[in-house]
Length: 249
Length: 249
DNA sequence: GTTTCATTGATAGGATACAAAAAAGCGCTT
DNA sequence: AAGCGCTTTTTTGTATCCTATCAATGAAAC
Image (cartoon, rainbow over all chains, first blue to last red; front, side, top):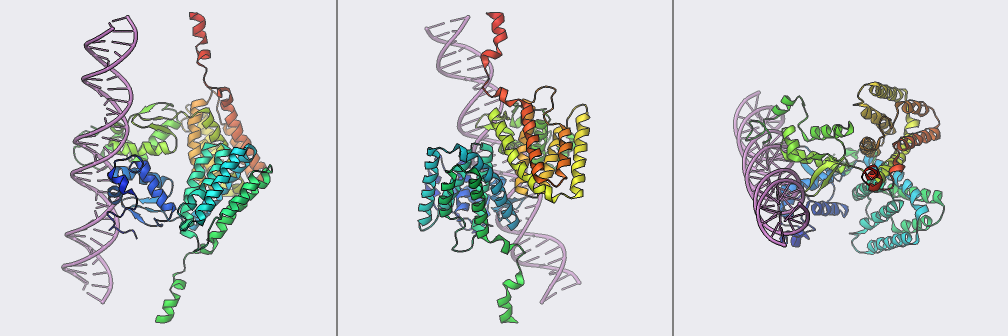
């Protein structure tokens, strides 16, 4: 919609705006709010994000908004073009592939390091995330589903213990969420919680090789479900308007 | 104030010309200038980076400096503490280890993808970088050595073809430069160009496994030369002042 | 009727002003 | 003389303002 008309249409931040409260109106808060909105697809790819507008919504000056936007841009969730402003990013098919490839690299290493370190507590925490994942998926609107789904993967990286790789993965998961929103075929979930449950079983075993393979396969399956290869060739405008052509020709 | 005679708007690039730092006065330019200074150890770890100070040096307002500093912070080259300003980061031993571990993960994948794609042109470009590396190393002050050394690794990632992984590696190489500056023992180069020459030979062969192993070993050797394990335990103040204690006791 | 150019309206980039927080300096008290 | 609390100073955080730039629209020329 990119509606330049929504001056006061903020869903939740209403309380935030009035109370000069903590969570919502700092640059971190705005960053989170926008990122969440992107993940939950309330902000579709290509939506313009004007500074003034956001500033009014969160009742802060553009200065603060800009900080949040630049941070989002550094994580490739929004595109900023000089003098043209920010918009929700629209990752290309190529980029989407690279993100998945990068995830395979990092998460394979993650699993390899995590499996030998797995304790019962870790296992429980993962199991709880699978449950939340499951619950969120059942929920009417899967508002938080993507979040929990990502949390499962991130938890594994946490167990692996390398903060650097974990932060890379965090970024990749964010980008993946955006990609899924952009490319996911209708009514077809890209990353099922069932696979996470299976994965958990293998992760808690002692076969590191098998666990790594399972994770890589899982990621490959997620990518596959997006059907990126079909969109590889550029969009054929003629084909798209073929029906119109039929009626007009 | 920053400028000499500018009360109102900025006359585009006037001030930059005076400093000979053409292009040095944009946020990108300042970012590069500070990053370079960190890599070349002209800015040691812990150096405070006050905003107005830098603003005066580059003859821009704090706004632009802040943008550069926040970007540097997002790449972990500087630390920004709320209300306390920015300083050149001092990565811990733990962090240093994690950076190297992450590099092993990413560069192993990089090599694995790059070797099968290696063309004579790629080979030449790598060879040229090894040469520059060598030349810079011979040079009195190894001002640019770290840069070329990093460029070799980055070029491999470029050949591999995944831009996402390449950008991660770019960040890691920057952090590695800082780490080397911080931990490198005196007169002992952490990452010799000779190893790069050897590596190049193996990379141009067809044995992917061997190439991956060689890269991982190379990185492990670099890390080892820093002697991080010796600094693993936290700094023992008593031991440091033991000589003083001897003389005073 | 189409193309080109100028004006206008909107929005990002950047500088400055002001407020708040921390650090440093200073005097006072014990 | 040493410690403590207040004041001053420095530096960051945020708001606001000005200007450069871009796109969009309308007018003029072809």
